[in-house]
Image (cartoon, rainbow, N blue to C red):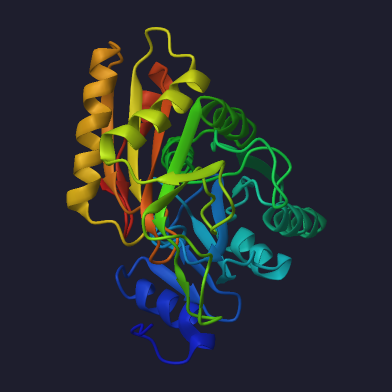
Length: 329
């Protein structure tokens, strides 16, 4: 399978360097594969996220005003090592501490936790929140508890806005955990992705089947079934998500996320059904985001995230953001 690239070993560095040219307020640190905001008089808690490459625009695409202060990339589908993460922490730190937002995968938990210890040895206060929004799988060989998937982007947005408003590190940690506890996601795949560093597909899937509830690295979901048409699969995912969400009159935000190959035409068809179902259930949607926000290279498929909001989260979700991959004015 052909991809527009040079040396597979250089795809992460060339990608991040190219991203850094999008915005003059970003800086690329090639040795550690870190994208960070240039420090221009900021005096706020730093917000850092990251993980393996292959999920673009996550995570580096969300570095900028109102979201992340730095993002750390590992190799494709591989957690960045603690030294890389430490560099991200240092670039985000302005003296008020740093919050790490990570997805619940064992490699990320281990490496970001080690980086936290290293940073604290240098006098930087660091806290961690762990996103566990996937309702499909309770436990897996890659995580202790539920996995973190596309809803992570909404955590970036809300926590990043709060940091911009001057929240303390402790308050950001509380807020981050509140968002995570109210955030539910589930997805499905029609095709595997091609992993350029291995030259192989991430898994095999018969052409007439879909995988329900898979992870963003191609980890197994709950089951496979024959493709039944969009609405049937959307309804199944929504049933699972809403059963976990326990919405009782609260407003919600919706993220319809593509996994890389899925077109906007398809994503808007998905959102059409999501909107109709939520309207039938008298659930008020105050914000809808549709697009490719947390991908799995070129995987065909999508996920749906629903965030139950209170007034604080709603205000922060709608606050200004100016990043390469997410803008709100």
